[in-house]
View 1 (tube, rainbow, N blue to C red):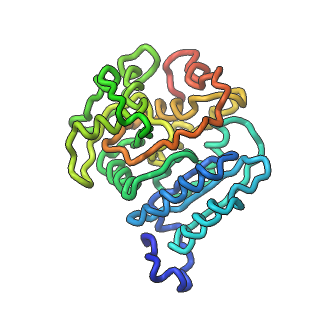
View 2: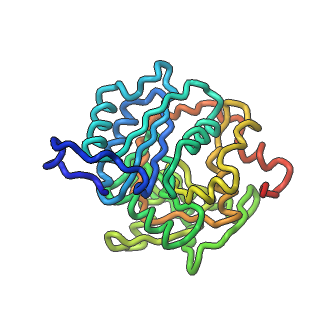
Length: 294
């Protein structure tokens, strides 16, 4: 079922049936209650798709759900008839391990890894799910856009935009390959400007080639698990970044991946919680060459 409307919130909802859920939304969080509440508010506005929320908290007190704004948004999701799973995961073994922990609790055929500082426009998840099913690839991403940069057009960074014409096919992206240069597409408000230039109608979407898509990526769960998910976490020190790049490059090589325009994902532009980025996961995982474990 899709979200119940407010006129029926006071009625006892039917028990949530997770077997019918289209998307598990997996959110890792640590110490950002205001940003998390905004992220959850965006999810509550996704009234046209069956979703379950799985929230894993690494905050010092393990009580992110106790912050008033967060608690309020969780209540909204629950009265809508959504299934909400709250987890605590105090062991700090790094971003990749936390993502694998969330993946281990997923049940739906599609999983959306959503960072705790991203607001989604209504209809965004349904649009991504439509794209994933239509394209038949391993993941579809909605690049986050920083709207404080709306007046900052960067044609030198968006020139690498390339639509997928025809089916999305597997490809290899690494540092030094032409595909790696696409990373600049997702800087600042670049996705906003590219989408405006495409002159799309409401509900329409266009797939395009990516280097990777951070913070908001919808995976075919089977595809992600077949390439190992984030189980490479134990090859990394706890302080690292780029774990999503590794997972997506592996999925892209086997199943293909794409971004879609327009993106309904807005970055809240809060200070990052990942302050030590000296270890970039792709440099460690792919240090011995381009071979992906089968």
